[in-house]
Image (cartoon, helix red, strand yellow):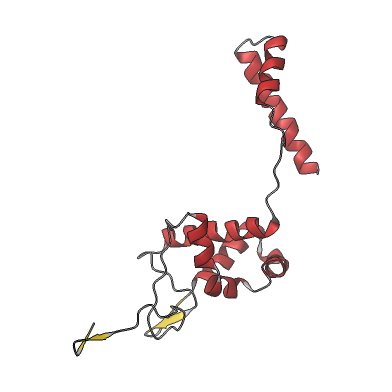
Amino acid sequence: MKLRKRLDELQNAIDDEVYRIYDISEEDRRLIEEEIEPENEYEVMPSGEHIKRLLSYFALEVMKEDEDGIVPVSDMFLGTRKEPGMAARVIAKLVDEFGEDNLDRTEDEIAKVLKMSIEDWFAKEFFEFHTTLYRLRPVIWQLSSERSGHGKGRGKREERSGKRI
């Protein structure tokens, strides 16, 4: 609550300065604030939604930073080189944001809310959340092959007229 109090103090200071700069009278200020005052000043996002959006944001950042924009869900080897998967890269972002010392606690809290690890969430639920969040216009696309087993039939080859397509 200390943070909320401080944010309110800063908001009031900003409001005071804007009203002063534009020479708005106390009476006009009262009318303006009555008109724009929301019924429920702060809508609290459920923690699960907040965490999913945070992970999604970090996933978008990972995609932007990747040279070719293609990031595997899980770690994978390309020849002799290991390419970190989305979950590993997002966890690195969590370290950047919250610090190495807080990583275990952060991962535990996230897993408790999601009821699964970050790795499992990216493998099993991320894409559905992402497409819902962006109203079926995803920014990140899921690509799969028949070898991965995660595509639920996508990527399978069909035979028509004796030709493989």
